[in-house]
Image (cartoon, rainbow, N blue to C red; front, side, top):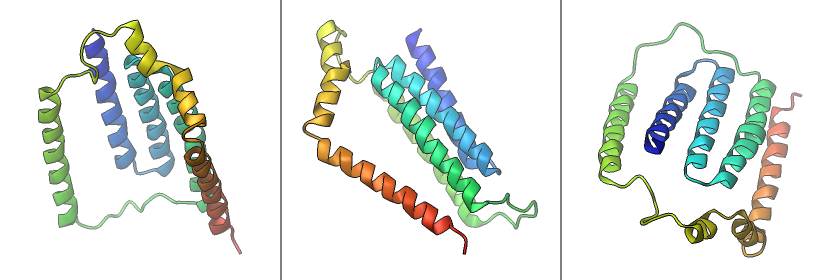
Amino acid sequence: MEQTVMIIFGALTITTSAMVVCARNTIHSALWMVASFVSMACIFVLLHAPFLAILQIIVYAGAIMMFIIYAIMMLNIREEDATRGPVRKSKIFGIGLLIVLTLLLFVIGFNMSMTALKGPITLQVFEQFGNVAVFSRYLFTDYLLPFETVSVLLTAAVVGAVVLAKRD
């Protein structure tokens, strides 16, 4: 049962991710990306990683998507014209390559196990790999400098985007 639900959410994630690329309107593309992030959070819940699921919703579907939509609205990106040129050879090559890579992923995926951990899932394994306290202890002690560096870089990126989008 759990494997069936995992496959359903995996297919939903792939479908919504494809819609991000295929949508003509940039706002629709951003909304499909939110749907993709939510379905990924459901996959994290199925993998017994609730902390990652919550981070997926709060950080990506919430904060990052808000920045993306804000940038789209500030840059005033318009929809493409309805008149399109002929299909280029590079697009045909890209679609063919996408199909080959997707088939390759299916072949590799069916030959591998669905779970990353081997053996029974016991309380000790869950505490070792799924405990939020262990993750946060490492994040805020051993990896505090990279964590803070990323926050400074994200703030600099937002300031840079506002400066670039500012009109004279």
